[in-house]
Structure formats: structure tokens, C-alpha cells
Image (cartoon, rainbow, N blue to C red; front, side):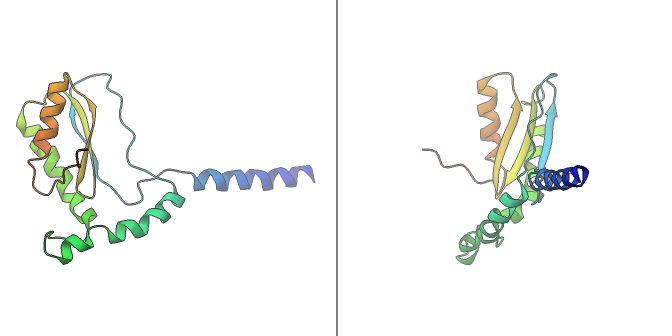
Length: 144
């Protein structure tokens, strides 16, 4: 009898662990752009639990529709830009030449580009941020 109870508890724990697994449910782009600094820690890729994904799904479905409806945006959803935008950002940063001595990853979510990794100087990080804003369709974070 004790063994049967243990199996039920083990099955419940396995279900809880699976439910808390973090995945990139929406396939948000995440690419390494440069890899020149050894020892730079790899940032965590985009991910969320299944519960978080369900809560986020409606918001994602609606994001950017008003922008498209009034003719200010070319695609009906902000997330539709990311799969082609992030490779262009990566290409632009690689071709620039100023960032060859960095180790940087790029993630995209609704036209917002996040740079993560290691650079040599604060000035280099600022230059990289400014360079990314020059790529078509990148949305700038509001500055407060």
C-alpha cells in the first residue's frame, strides 16, 4: 500500500515539474550575434511556463492591431515582424565592424530588440544600441 501512494505522489510531482517547464512557446527569435569574449555567460533564452503562456496568448494576439488598422504599421500584429527583423539586426551588427570584439545575443519581441551579453566598454554598448535603432521596423523603448 505504501508503494502505491509513493507512485501517486511521484506522478503528481512529475506533472508539477512539467507544468513549470519554461519553453519558448511563441518561438521568439534569440540569436547569438558575436562571440569574441571568452567566458561571457550565455543569457537565458526567452521562455515561460505553460500557465504564463496561456495568460500571455490573448495579449499577444491583440498587440499592434490598432497600429495596423489606422495604417501606421504594415503588419497586423507586432510579433509578426520579429522572425525577419532579428536576422536583419544580427546581420547589421556583424557587418558594422565596431562590435567584432563583443559577445552579444539578440532577442526580439514585438519589434523591441533586446541586446544581452558582454562588451568592452559602456560606449560600445551605447553605440550598439544606437546602431540597432537604425534597422527598419525596430521599435525604440520609450525613455522616461
